[in-house]
Amino acid sequence: DVKVTQSSRYLVKRTGEKVFLECVQDMDHENMFWYRQDPGLGLRLIYFSYDVKMKEKGDIPEGYSVSREKKERFSLILESASTNQTSMYLCASSLGASVYNEQFFGPGTRLTVL
Amino acid sequence: GQQLNQSPQSMFIQEGEDVSMNCTSSSIFNTWLWYKQEPGEGPVLLIALYKAGELTSNGRLTAQFGITRKDSFLNISASIPSDVGIYFCAGQVGRAGTASKLTFGTGTRLQVTL
Image (tube, rainbow over all chains, first blue to last red; front, top):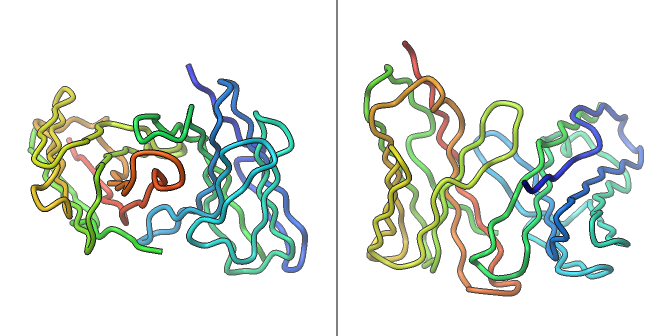
């Protein structure tokens, strides 16, 4: 079974802090994704990566950056956390870039910024 | 970025009832997907549709890819308590590469009472 794990289920940070959210997948998937989930808005893509050290902006990249130094690990970075970044963050991975490759999701990290 | 409109936003139904939900877009998608998210978990793929007009079943679930390519429908027959969760539609424009990224709907929250 594909397993996508996220470093924390719950996180509380203060405004202005630098925040790292970590995601690890154990199935040698090429692609990894970061989404945020907000009530009434569904899931929105922040950044994705098709290969190590490669990244592309999604629909809402402002205020975020990412890092993919190893194939299995994809980190989301909030350079200076703000209250409007309070949200549920979901990581996903897929085997390849084809539409036929299912995206598998982690359990999510609920981030609260005070 | 674009979002897909899902309706209804939430549903409260009795066990044994049938459920219908739909997803609409202002632009065309070439693939439609339906995901379910249970409390405390990430979304899991239920059904994938790759062709306009396609009707696909997965147990008690049936989904259809609209002829116009701008909508999709999900039906659940004879609901049971474990159907509780949030159901998301997702669309993809392209077949591979960056064009294969997902656009998610706003979600339908389903509650089933005994």
